[in-house]
Image (cartoon, rainbow, N blue to C red; front, side):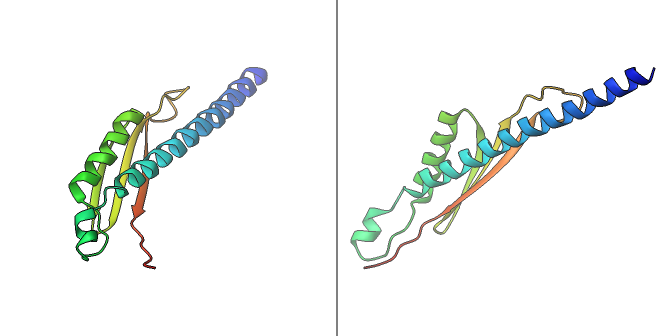
Length: 120
């Protein structure tokens, strides 16, 4: 009886450790994907405004399109918002737990990029 209880306890601890590690790995991947999507969107610059002396700005609609295209190519879904020269990306990435009774099946990653310009 004691052996059975110890084996069940060890199995429970092992499942928490394994699923926790896999979930952290999925979260890191979701965060990285969100960061890369934000960087991709931040490259959508308004060259017309820069050439006419109105400064370097992000084109919001093109930035959202570029970031969403990156998310699609990575196989995840997410939301992209552009405020001024800053892009925020939130990614919902699927996660398949090894022991589904213990953890959920989705992780959320966050990323942002801000256009910085130093005139020379």
